[in-house]
Length: 240
Image 1: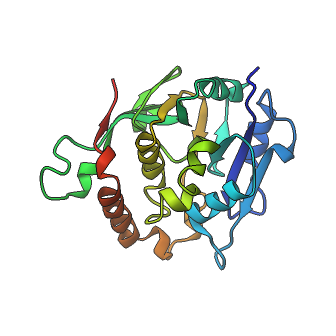
Image 2: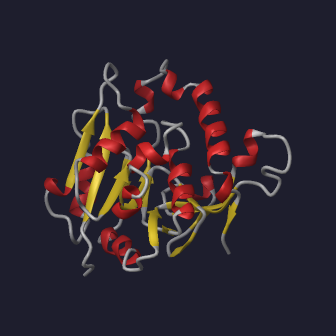
Image 3: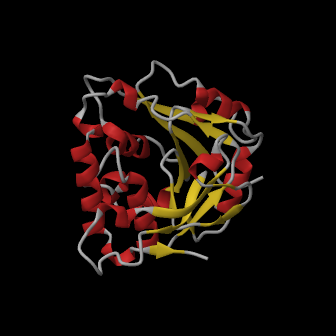
């Protein structure tokens, strides 16, 4: 059993986050709701992804913080042991359940900016419909970027950049996962993808914000441009 302590962190607009029960029930090291912390938003008072994740970071002292979307369903027993084993290597800063081998095209910063230059490739996961998004993957491997539906982060990484507010100051609903992984590279951490069997329903929270600026096309475009300008030193990224 790992010596590290993991805490589930979840931002939600639901009165509860019932899927978290499954993650606790199928874990080996987490046994009570006190091993998970929720950040409740409402349409009238929404801290957004980055604000909520910053609050979850500030409100807990666990060494390893597991940020899960509220619509991610666990399908694997003892998933936490697989995740924690990755952090036995002190060089690992981020672990995700979906990740891509490369992020950013080869002409990035060599030609005028185009949003599609920030795409990711060779994506893999073990969600129910993995083949729709990329390749099915059940093992663990090095990646350049992880998808935001499940991000497990070493607290020491966040502490070095004033948390989520420091690493993702110019984005919110979009690109926070890009920013986390880019900051990890900047600070010298490795990024891993573990093929945990799970499923991401997608859209459970965003459907409550159909007319919100936070999920608008303008916010999407602005977040990507901010990321492009902010992380030039570590983009594009590619691992074998």
